[in-house]
Length: 194
Length: 65
Image (cartoon, rainbow over all chains, first blue to last red; front, side, top):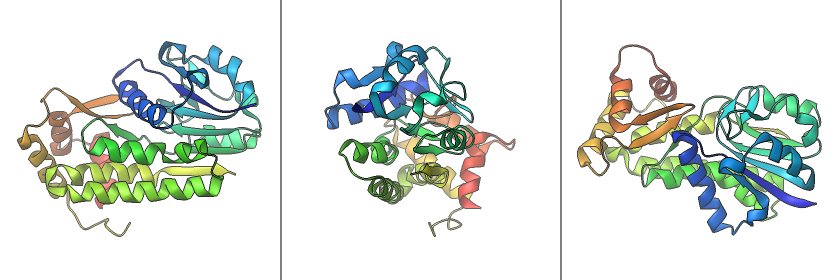
């Protein structure tokens, strides 16, 4: 059994940015290509084939309250294939799925779900991009290092607080705007199960 | 965070205007995406200044009110 399967579509403006966030993690953590489904390979079919060999799914971008979306705009994860994730963890950088899909996943035996209960914002504007990317990726980054769940949650919360403070330091240069957006992301972060 | 309530919408707009005035980014560069919507700097500023409700403004107001 392998550790983490990384899933990152790239098919519109939003996924271009979120795929860049994934690329940041991929380079920094030296993630093997065999553990990645990205761009046109990020389909439901490929996910369903591969996930049985993994303990954890890490997912970037485009979520709905009841689904995570694949590269072809089909649902990658929804109520109809949650049984494939029994006993596994799901970590997301995606809108809304913490609202319905996350609780459903836990009810159906997923061991842990990290998501957001509202839309989330991502940005490509330096230096704020680094603060957003660091906070949004923090939990899965720590999990990749083999850290226990409680530690991953703690580190992610710390990364959000640090990012919000760093945005504030650039208050007069747009930082106040980005601070509020990152804070909104943080306010809607949920950890379910675990 | 105890920082909530310290700033007004006008402060946030001013901060964004300052970033625009720095001209470090092209006016047409998308700067952020929220769900399926992509915003340039000017789009974001327009949304915050719009009297009609929109998602970006709602998010900002949620964090300052």
